[in-house]
Length: 54
Image (tube, rainbow, N blue to C red):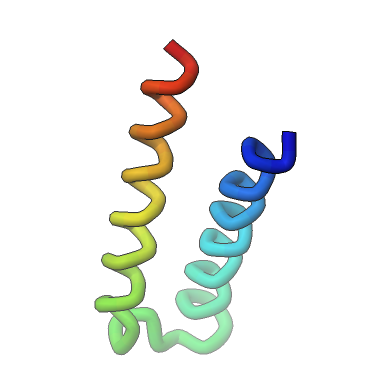
């Protein structure tokens, strides 16, 4: 069960990081490389979940 919940928790933390950088620090453009890596990682996990649940 933990294997299913942990990626979802990481996704929530990543969304929190994006919102923090965009709304509070206002330096998201300076961290675009990190944002792209995180979005790629998230996309791969979504693909894995899609394949697992079919």
